[in-house]
Amino acid sequence: QVQLVESGGGLVQAGDSLRLSCTASPRTFTTETMAWFRQAPGKERDFVAVISWRGDLSIYYEDSVKGRFRISRDSAANILYLQMNSLRPEDTAVYYCASTRGSMYSAISEYDSWGQGTQVTVSS
Image 1 (cartoon, one colour):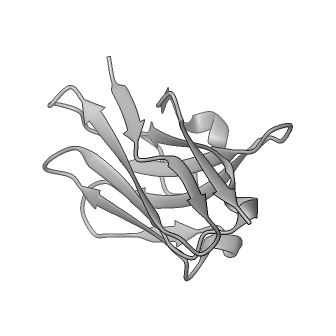
Image 2 (cartoon, rainbow, N blue to C red):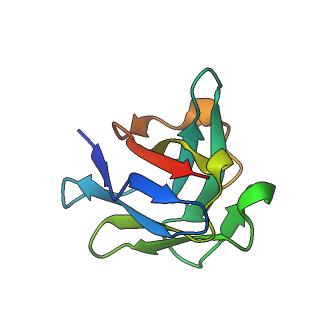
């Protein structure tokens, strides 16, 4: 059974940076696509960024994080990253990593493995 574990969240000030990590197990873990989502209090879980897990690198970002966040992968080590720069109070949310055997265009309902989430709080 696939297990995803996020880490790296915390409390920061506006303009600061954080790097989130998501470690997948078991070692034989394989998938097609991994992504970061976030959920603010009282809101739905929203897409943040997605990356192809195998083969040629393909990446896509939600508009509000373009130029500030960078998703990356270490497929050999089964680790997904999200580098978050120039953080804003509106980035405050619980951040989740997720995987799907579907493509980069998969709907959130097609992601079948999820981490427990890591809290990111950005103060103004």
